[in-house]
Length: 398
Ligand SMILES: [Zn+2]
Figure 1 (tube, rainbow, N blue to C red):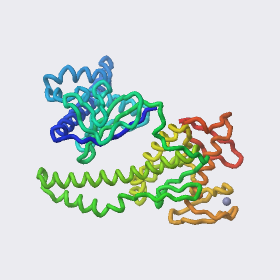
Figure 2 (cartoon, rainbow, N blue to C red):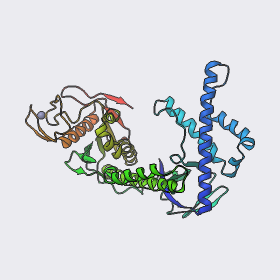
Figure 3 (cartoon, rainbow, N blue to C red):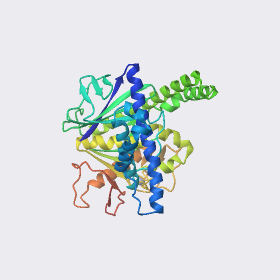
């Protein structure tokens, strides 16, 4: 299985300049190819005898002109422009398959990265060798064993990282499993997560805690004159704060998903209609803070590493508004209502625990052999419609 280890780099000034230049070259190549793609596609629409754009053709096209038009590209690894265009091809593939939006132009400061193929770098303990640059110190050595596939060097605020992708069969890096069976997880606004066991995992709420500082820094930035050194410094300060916030958030998510996949082999989660919820501005900040998509992504790959399974409930299944005891659906349940009593069976519910219980039930019913499957061993993910009392469970494979 493919797994990546992200390691902080310790470049000296000369090396940092090179890394920035390579990332800039990659961004330029990506944006050049995207603009060409759009132009060639329009031309093809007008005249079908012309070739349709492709990443392979665009790479050949760039190679043919770069010596003359963009000689500075030759100062960095040839992987930087090449891999960027290959990644553009992948972005278009994801777009055509309906997995992603139309590719966007890369932006300086946000997309500072370049990728190396495994024949273009080598590792030796705590250092990595990059073409035209030499050895760069890493903060730690690679944690995984296996075939090294690629390395992506990226900048976050003022720090550089390398993310090394390894194809590994070895799962000794996983903390010991202690399977306790099934759990339902309700991701929330007040708590990061509520488990069907009744546990509540508090979130880091980084945004809220540092919102004041964030606002002050952004204001201070907007007062600085454009192009001035003070503006650059204020910008760096703000970027560092953003990076710290993101780190805290990611750390909490990793701890949660590691804990869950370690403790439970079958995990029911909500197929949250994030888009719908993001429309609600009051909710939007908490949701983007918590990173629901990232939660699902981590949960799915970590469960897959352990042979566990994540069951995603149908996104229209109202886990909050259904009684987990008798299945009675409520007409409405305002967000402010944290406790309620089922009018049908009289069960007392904590809003979030009840939702988690429902998701647990969805996970359990998905493994009932309705389609001739006894499923807890396979690591596939499924979308499952909620089981009503009499209906059989239906599977919608992803
Ligand atoms: Zn009930």
